[in-house]
Image 1 (cartoon, rainbow, N blue to C red):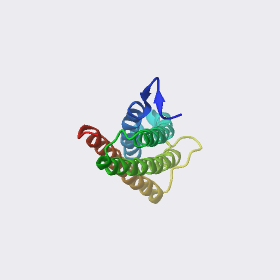
Image 2: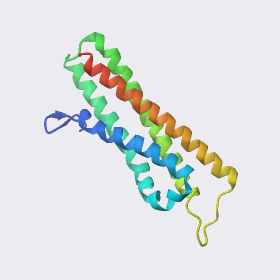
Image 3: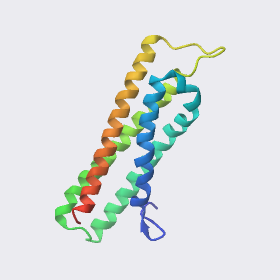
Length: 161
């Protein structure tokens, strides 16, 4: 299911969604947590990104697993490159986990730091600061793993398989 799209390996096509959505989620999550003025304008977009980014990371992981299985089963990869691809696969797993963590933190930030209005109480200052800090850490971890994963994949491809 995740191996090909119209005869082209799906992984190089699908991964671009994760490469765009995960950093966008990270940046917007930190912005939402740190800048109260943008909260009313970005709340729904951020909520949708918190749902879409992990899905895109999951699809990239599943298509990458299928692509690696296809390459190794057909002996299309030199044995010396298999460890590079397996390292890339492990980084992809970590990217997925980091993105899921960021999405959970982001949904908590959206829920608890919603703009105050009639009948909506402000969160306690300690909770607000904790959510801001968690948002910053989760965004940093997600960005780190997206960059590391992309770099390892690019190096594996461009150094020759």
